[in-house]
Image (cartoon, rainbow, N blue to C red; front, side):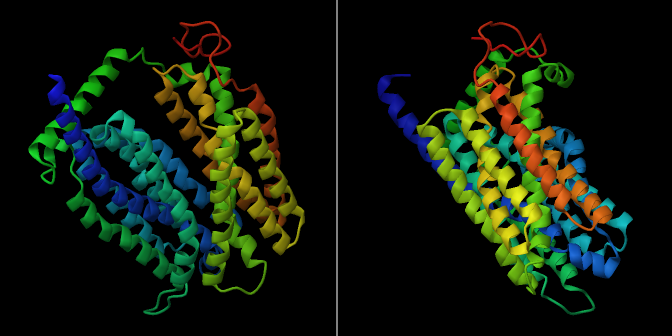
Length: 447
């Protein structure tokens, strides 16, 4: 291409990318917010389910965690179907079915139906997050995806703050023979289903389908995406099985560290409302407001630690420090009264939320770029099973002992162990090159 023609072509691509981001990113952030709320709102109705349906602590914990089993089992099949049917149809389907199941949670009537619906909710949501990531690869050039992901992930931060007040307010709705918790499920699930109309109108599967882009803009985006895909295909290394990846002790170590971090995050997510209710005679809306405080603190801390880690580079030390903070907070909350315990969870939040973001540069620096995507997906999938074990274990312990003290001590211990083990994790590949993961003591990065 002549030099004079390159600049107009770049301007066309830049303009097209700006249009794409303004169209899809706000929509995906809103989708992520309602997705998160439909996933974790169960934590606010534990006492209501106990009073109205007789669902005890152990059953509640197991049901809360079964969501992650369904999600993990169907994540890969869902992604395959997304590529077959197109992002527009499949992301709309995912949102509609999770909204429908979330709304039908209003009609659970026993432990068995509670288990089934939580498992089904995980199946319905499976593929949403990786589906959005895949969507970005079809619409945005490589250099734009990192910033797009940062904006998208902000939806989780916003949702963790909004979920408490919104759900708490809806729990106070009564009438038509339905309890507040039933109205909460119906309304929040209904919002997800209603949003499907917007998703269907706003999304297109490929840039070629986007009539809101000019023809030259569609061509520019399609051309750069096709070129990048060809480059990735040419540089793609041999496929490595899950068992092959898990033969590398470093990858197993990464999985355990992230699992420990997720244990604490989901332990706090599902059981924090219970701790708050022990602080005093609060209504559901007040509980929701208190529930937002640790997440506001933790999100601020996450960004502060990110700045510090960027300035004073020692990633393992920063992850270890945040895990120790998390462990101290959870330990104090275990033997303190409700008010001090709540403050201690806020302190723990400074650690576990920061640890979840500071952790990822460690495996990214160690892994061969050719298999990094597969390994990071594996770490994320196994780590998220902490969302099953944390509530299930908490519920069992409370059922047997009448207290969640043992669970809080366990979370503290897991964080401490992870803080020590993180110093065994390599942030750079070994000196030897050319070996794939699963061979010998560690994965060597090809350079």
